[in-house]
Amino acid sequence: KNHSLSFENTFLFDNSKLNLILGYTGNIRKEFEHHEEHEEEETEEEHEEHEEESAALNMQLNTYTYNIKWFSPTIGEHLEFIIGSQGMHQSNKNSGEELLIPDATTRDLGLFTVLNWNINDVELQGGFRMDYRNISTTEHTNFLKLEKNFQSANYSLGTTYLIDKFIFRANISAGFRAPNTSELLANGVHHGTNQYIQGNNGLLSEKAKQLDFSIDYNNEHFNFTLNPYYNLIDNYIYLSPTGATLEESPVFEYLQKDATLYGGEFGVHYHPHDFHWLHIESSIATVFAEDENNNALPLIPATKTNSTFKITFEDNNK
Image (tube, rainbow, N blue to C red; front, side, top):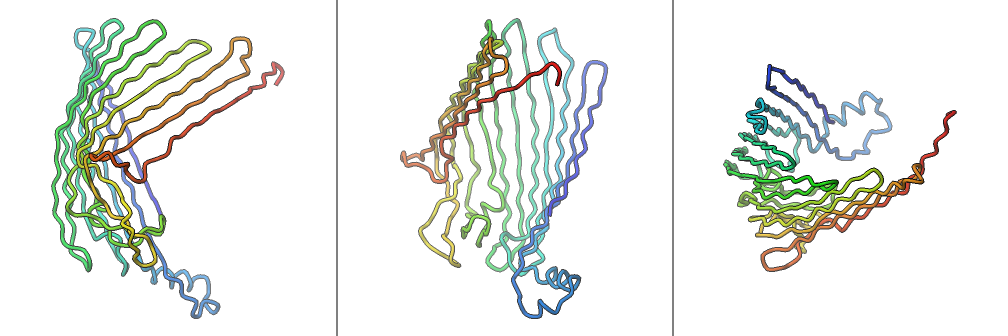
């Protein structure tokens, strides 16, 4: 069961604005054991009550988030900047006998600023961000008590250049992702994937550096996009098969290694001048992922291609 509530408001001032987003998501996950005894004699109400009481796994996950951004007035006709903060408070509570992860609380806090500078056909953008995550759990059977803190400083720098019908973009950035409670502490069968997943409480934060470039061309009847990228990730977290079996399910464990991910996307859209009713679109996306020893990483998405041939019938009377 999922319940979500969000609130967004924009406050407009003379030359600036403030955007505020507040959110709540409640997730209840239950798994039931099958009991055939006396099922035929039960009324529907009794069956529902019995089922509610017999939930072998019962987790309540509450997530509260906020996102606040202040957009500055334009300075000297060319410079604008944004100052903001994002945060999350997430709690997981178990009520059933079976546990996928223990009771846990996750707190996130991020502070950031972004600067935009525009002049003629050139746009420069730079950003800086600080992130902090705290994870604390209680002790349960098969789960040790855990208290972890993660933090990182990151940056981004990019430029966009317009020339005729072309748009050129180039970016270099640093990224950060702290492990979540499932990656740190999972210990059991995930029935959605038929995997016995083992967490790793020694995981470190992922830290990445990425370089990407894109070319866009647009005119009235034809456009295309080319976007290659190259990403170096320290302590890349991934789910790897062990070859063992537990509870009739293959065992997967979370590991991490330095990794390289590279690939790109290409898309084209053709709309002939003499055939306005015809649209031809095609795209392809691919990614290659290797660890520090040039071994392919598991569970990487396959190359994906998609093509669309669309005809629109137009009739002035309909």
